[in-house]
Length: 85
Image 1 (cartoon, rainbow, N blue to C red):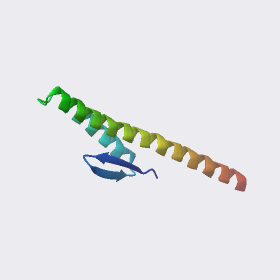
Image 2 (cartoon, rainbow, N blue to C red):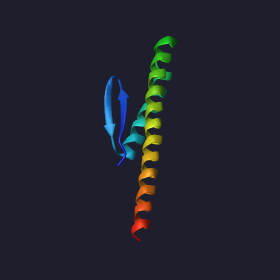
Image 3 (cartoon, rainbow, N blue to C red):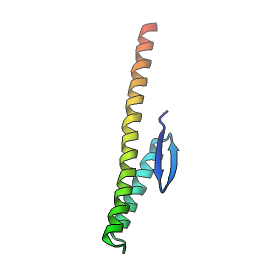
Image 4 (cartoon, rainbow, N blue to C red):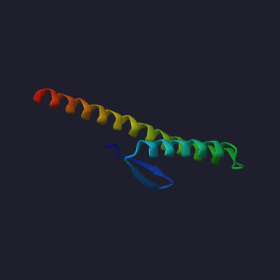
């Protein structure tokens, strides 16, 4: 099971579902696109986009960490199975 924490607008979301993580990434990418075409001044746009990109980076980092854990767990399980075979 993989678990990640993602901060968005001051809230933290914890998820253990890969499809939910992908959905969050898609949502953030959509928010970035919306912000790029918003009527905010350029300084505000840059700040909001930077915050969204940081959230996206956190999600991607947690995915990499979760994948490493899964790979490690699979290797451990494989090793245990071979010991008892």
